[in-house]
Amino acid sequence: MIMAVAFSQPLIPLDIIELIMEQLANDGDTMSQRALKASALACRAFLLICRKHIFSSIRLDGQEGDWSINEFKRILEKDPAVARYVRQLHYFNDFSGKRGPRILRHLRRVRELTIGSVDRMEYSPSRKDWNTFSHPFRQSLRYFIQYNDIVALSLVSISNLPMYILWSFPNLIDLELFNVAVASEAWPKKFRGPERPPELSILRVRHWSIRAMQDILHAVESGASQVCDLSGLQDLYLETEDGRGGRSLDCINSILRSSRSLRTLELTIYPGLVCLETLSQNLTEESLQTLKKITIGPVIDGPSLDPYLHFTQVLEQISGKNILEEITFDIQIDTDCHCSVEPTTWEQIDTVLSGKGFPSLRRVLIQVTVAWYSPGHHEFHSGVESLGSTAFSRLMENKEVDFDFTVKLEEGVQVWAEGEELGLSDDAAALTLSASEAKDVLAKWTTSVESLMGWLDWSYWVKCRPACGYEEMCYLPTWPFFGGGPRGPRPPKDGDQDRYHSKFLNWVWGLESSTPPGLGSRTALPGEGDDDWLRPQPRCIRRMEPYGERISSS
Image (cartoon, rainbow, N blue to C red; front, side, top):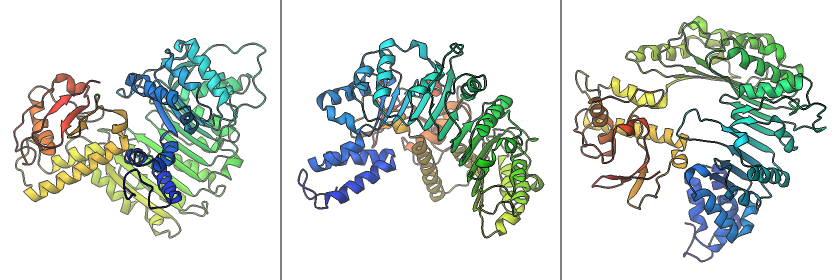
């Protein structure tokens, strides 16, 4: 801590302290937030500096029980001035009680609003019907919107959402739709909307929201009042829907035709959409003179698919008519699905970009993620890696373009696959790992899994309740230290659970033995059962021997 004595004035000038705290707030990660909160407890001067950052973003979730909503309500009642610090509000899962409205009426300076229904334990969360929101809550939400200048709005897992609600946000420039479906009610006769609908600069359409966006666009095309203005759209981020390629492509093309100043285009393409060739016909001439960054993320699930989904033809057609500076292909090869590793298939991007039709191009990134769980994956992985030296000779020689080709195994799979290759499975003929090599592998795996957990920010979504003691840590059993996930190896059955635990859980957590996986014995942790493999729950686990755990109530 940057202090001489607790609760005394700091030795460093407060303006320097304020810059440090501002940087911690901008970092946004869990550790920075903890440091910010700890600093606020140091002295009153630090408290006055830190609390505007601590309360700048608030998350209220009714699914977490009464804690988050009631606690913030208590803070506001004790010190209403805290409300003026709130700039971002994330509100989930409480649309019928009185607690939410009592909080909303205090807030007057919110700029970014996220609202919806979220179940963090589900991969595909169910939608909350807008019509089930209580009348008092909807009324409070309406007043809240009127009293706050909302410029960024995220709608999450809501069904029957009235599309005209967007008119309540006249200054809206950033809209995200995540798992949203709009109401299918007929447009009122002789009904006219505002003269100036929200003019969007940023649009994100994610996770089964293509249909909602299509309905919004169709309302305009059918002669109804315009729901939102996309002519000034600068940044478009869109995920297609698995198995609905035609609908997704129609939506993309409609948005492209509407925009006149596109700057960033990012498309994540799930199986079902196999060709992007028509995009060039819908990019307006104005957008071609402003578009600087394109990211295409195909998911390849078969050997016949072009890894670029024919986007190279789009590049051919806009050659000489663009100011593109950066092109990224984030290609995912789906589980157990081969794709071609012939250089002639992959070098088409090298051929297109080697001409003089892209004078502003400065960076080309091709990143291939291989999700491969079957024995023999190594040969295929090596074949993809070899493309970096055989398929992109012109790009590699171009000194004006920063070219990068990377191949990686999916994070969790990488640990499992490497363990198989090192002979750590019980059916391996022999274990060739020395003690020092085993220690190095353990360190590497621990870093990899911690990196993945940090990216997922599990400490934010999953917490032990009641909180763990000082000598404990909150632990969420996870593959490969526990069982499988929806895209990984399935949970073992019957006696196979012993194999997985003996290989990973005991060794990594040091519960019994320091020997590498496959050589140690296994003793079940208290509270383990068949249900834990299907729906793992956070637990408090001791940091030091004797190891043990207690199950946390969730």
